[in-house]
Length: 319
Image (cartoon, rainbow, N blue to C red; front, side, top):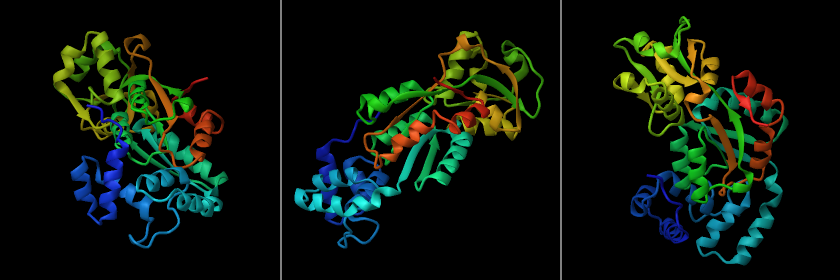
């Protein structure tokens, strides 16, 4: 079940409890939100210091801070004065990116390159797209979301948690069957024979995009009913990849880019493109973005050197 956007009245109640000094865990339980969300609101309200000793505004961009203070009942004039006081500090920002796990190798390199030529710090959280989308809907402090599935980007757009005007299709990928070490190539239709009684590693087949694509491809090829009882499901595609690389599962279904990134596996077969929906990585700036640099970083992902890095890692870059 996809979580709904947290209403302003609930946010006001949370801020009231924060000002009353209640523990984050108790506030989270009372209002049905994550403790992390409460902690973020607390930092925005009080800064990194001690409650009651408030700095002007905590954070890189003032919009989220201003909204938090407004909902907390702070006078508009005081908020405006604080925005002016903080303006010179908005030069160097922290850009928080929530990205599909399959992007790790490429994005880590791209972020490192960005930081060499910009004052900003890029912090990236990797996980399955479904998990990241739900965290964003629960108020997690992401500036940019890159999903491995249009479905989960659609979900956060529907709930009003991304800036729809910034949404774009960034990348494409292939789906491959990999084996431990340097396996021999074989038709994907031979999977049941290749597998025998052993396990097939896949990301969660009902929620994580790589697992969903894999299940769809196997179903299209008439193989799902033959192997579903042997599927070892992992939290995300990189966890499934690790199962194959370590030999815990002899075969697995991952993205082509994952096979490039992991030297402990080899490609047995590539699934036909028409056996599954197109693999698309949409990206967008979130509505809660704390920095205008998030849009600049997103724009840079379609240009060199980022473009070349993605291609070298096995992705296709959308035009």
